[in-house]
Length: 583
Image (cartoon, helix red, strand yellow):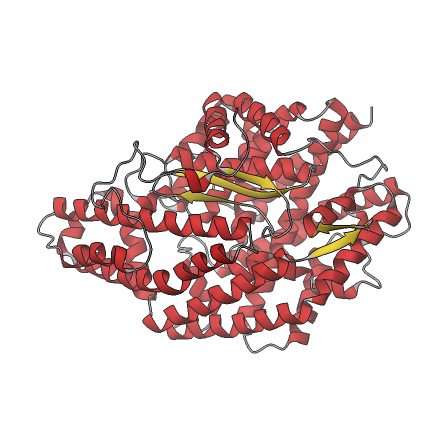
């Protein structure tokens, strides 16, 4: 019988479906010398025709996928058990010994390709890849490799700090994700007590987290200067290959959100305040049901979560359902929260097997359902591009990768009766739409915060705190944090993106707007919207970002003119679902 047990370590490489043609069938990675010869072969190979270049690219792609999967396996093992010293050593060996040499070798390959006269004869298929290679060559600085290793070490320290956080609740030690789930409880006193426990626990590591972040800011600014950039923000726009929008466009997003989204968010907050019958909304009032109903517990464990999600995916699309079932059968899921497990959720590719893996911290809440739907969308993206020969094209730009995941949350909403009765389904849909509005505002907060941090790299901790407070006031729903100012001022510590993948967050905002467009289309023509969605996913990263959006039947547009009608449609649907849930 299939289970949801994580069995990644049992999956052998290479796969029968995608055999190795360049690498030895028995190759495994113990140290850099195991792959050094393959890089030497690629670096020294003569390229005397366009066909030579294409064969060379295929071999380089195979090597890149092999190393990518090794990195993913080690990261999966480490995040699934942060207290496992052997897993930590294996991951850090890759970070400290293999990754630096790989980056240097990849830079030499990129330079070889960019300098090759035959590369200009490659078909238009390679246009995006060549653009990326040229960009990498321009950005690469050998002196930054050592700094990036230090940043990876700091990131791992951050992971360990958060992975170790627990609180005592009713005589039992529980993880922070499990504690946060209690903020949905109807008893306000319980919620306040839980909020206080979590806030106090996080603040115990405040100084350590501030130390880590200060060091990260210094090192990131140095990396940017080494590469010839004035600041780390501008450097990261190039690293993320944001060729199709600018920092000014992000500022326009911030303004549009403040003008068009925050009013809807605060309107929902006032609805919540009236329903709760309180004089002031407190931070522990923002996750509970406003009518005092007990929190929904849509599933009893990982097996139940997977079974119901499978039925949803099959109803959305039979092919997607079969893909999810394959993940379950192969052991490509690690879903339950437990002590020592890293926080958050992610989908990672096993690039050589061309299969996705999903990691999350499920504790039985609605959020868990939507996390799995979200990561499932990423997984379907990975399945959609399995047959793409070029490893680089099996990954889309982040702004479109998140369309894959966020759209799945919305496309699955009509099928949530697999978890809920009709009134609870309406309650969930209203709550989730309200959450998506809140997310757009939170993304603006996080993105604006990072823009300020890295364009003011000499800022003090006090200045950073003051700027954060201003953004919370500008984009927040208006909860009263009196007596819990510390929890408010350092709430960003829990946003792992700021520490681990700086500037990777606006993508969620851009993608959410794309996903809402797909949702809007699906309400008019479900079949056509799904076909466009799958077609966009099938292109991977082989097209520029605007063309990927166009292929999915949507537009890369986060202007006020596009946001306004979407917000009206969301507001109207929230009102409709509110009526259904209170019949």
